[in-house]
Image (cartoon, rainbow, N blue to C red):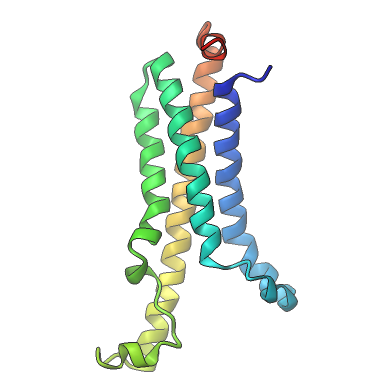
Length: 161
């Protein structure tokens, strides 16, 4: 039987790596295979669904681990990573501005070039925040997994709960 702690740590690491792969691979794939654009792989919905999956899995696994090995700094690293993942969703207007929304920004006095720069920065900022968040989450879970495996009876105690 797979122990809950091990399962959830590995699941959280896998989800974090999926976020990273999506963030880095989709732009390259869209350039190389433009037909993939019809699949809407760069859709914001993917980010929402990934956060909805990562949030409970990460919090559950890190909380279980911290109860056993008494290292709350791992939970804090994971929470910081989750905050980085949530930031683009919560602060969407600061991160993403569609270049085609000229009418919306016309009253702000932004030129087309300024709007394009703002949108370009938003895309990069979202990717940077996502990569930092996924990295922090993976690091916290990897360390949590290793500590749990090295702690005598840590994972065994969780499996019987």
